[in-house]
View: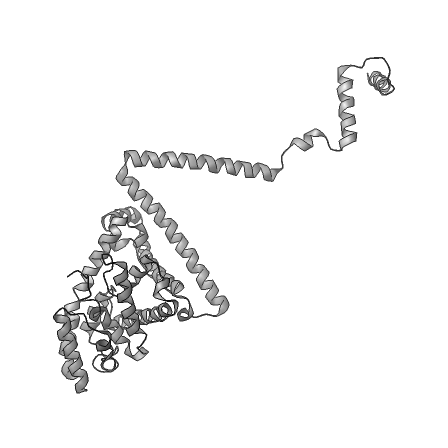
Length: 360
């Protein structure tokens, strides 16, 4: 058999008239193509392992998007309320993850370039401040989920009490507006108590001129008049020492100011004072960074968020009025020293109580 194949091959190469078998002809074509082009055709047609993996991943991703789209349309059509909660939760997780990555990047840059918190830009400082508050709230939720089977109860509590247990990323657009109104109503209840305390300590102020200025300011606010900037700055010295200095404030006033700043009051008095002082210092640092950046560089949403943090219910006030109020706040804040930050803390009440457009 081998000798027969060899004879047929020689005859074909010499141009013999003998017709080779089809098998031999195909074999010769493969040999010639191999000699001419090097590697066999099968090696050229076979895809590489990396190309196979990329093609598989692309196929799976495409199919997943299609299935996910059908699933979303099914939920939206048949279970609209559940779909709203589902989309809010998934988008909230994405936003929280994005905030975590940005915070990690900012902190890495701080370590790399040896930069302190007060040396950051306004947006970076504000992002870290807000992310810390969000993580603190999430940490509390994680603690109560530790006991066995408690996670089922936590999901129920999250649904029943979203304002108390969830952060802003997991609120619906309607809930965001409603909850901001509720929070402002809570801190607004502390305003009369704070003003009443200021009236009580007027006789304890040693300087007669400062006593007169304080009396006039309290009377004007109680009559519904918005105070001028110079009237507030005239009281700087009275808020730097006894009885209105940060370290001399009574415990009842510390608790009232904590409610006005939306901070918890369920802490011992020394911790309350320390936290309130730290919070005020951070706002003062933010004010300096914002003055350096310029209010005109902020978006409408950033302006409203900045006003709300400083005591103004900006959810229903026009954007231009918010910018005007924020400019007044910055003018006062940037003229205060660290020892006078108690005035900045009381300014949450003094400057926002009777501002134009504020809900009564």
